[in-house]
Image (cartoon, rainbow, N blue to C red; front, side, top):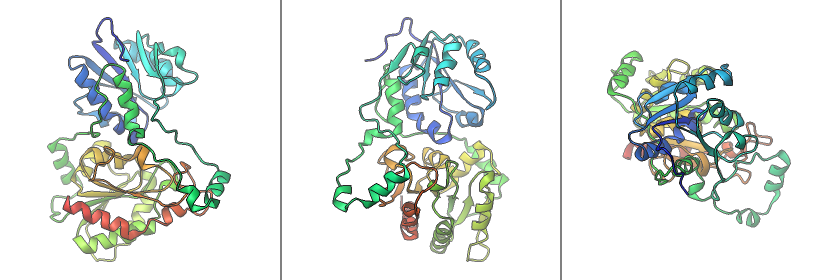
Length: 374
């Protein structure tokens, strides 16, 4: 049942998520909200580190950012100045509900969760299709591994609508918006792409450009082994004579440096840009790539939302719940582990990392080469 607004909202605040991949997954809901309220002023409250993601974006009129150390009262003061009619709170934390409560926004809507319902004027119940990302204990993992194959095969399939983008679409549907999914979408300008080519010396490259992103902030359980990235990149380079852009944050520089020094074809065009790009430059460079071989991490979501196919080994996480792009998009290649304990949703593997070790290089190479035919 949709909310009936009196009066019709003219100024809407969206409290965005705090992580890059999650933020990208909200874009279908934001676009649907814009469809529903084409004349409304829609502002987005986001951590400062993600503010540039939304410049420009057709669903958003204004970006309000806050620093990591900024306290809740300072954030609420910023929001009060906006004189918003309605707040839609996408994260599930108590703090995000309290922010819009302290801002005095008259209509405040979000999911029903412990410790924050009192701060919202309407709480939305959990969806029947939602699947909780349960972190398995070491004992639970050992128990699953010990099961007979016929017992393991009885696991129920995760429905397509369990994906995280449907969580956000369900929230905007409570405001009367269309709940049908759209592909996540981000945008860069032609000028930004040309500037990135110029700045990072890509203008002379005439062969296909592929991206490689070997890091993952969440933890080592999400990272395909670096030696597999190296082997796959070398094999792909032999088949395509491609150029490689190595992506990552400052913490990934040692890994990307190791990969850059491991190409077996002399003078291969490799651009190690880990820790060297702004968020907007990252977006432009990902748009330039024919495909991205990557772990399940924020830049993978950015690439897919820019229209760049992604190839992702999945071990500790679930492609059914959080894969980049629109669920079922054939452009993206999601290499799912057959390990019975996958997904465990842990930061570190408590046993032998079989989920990622069993995902072989040949599958990744074939998937990346397939992007050239799309």
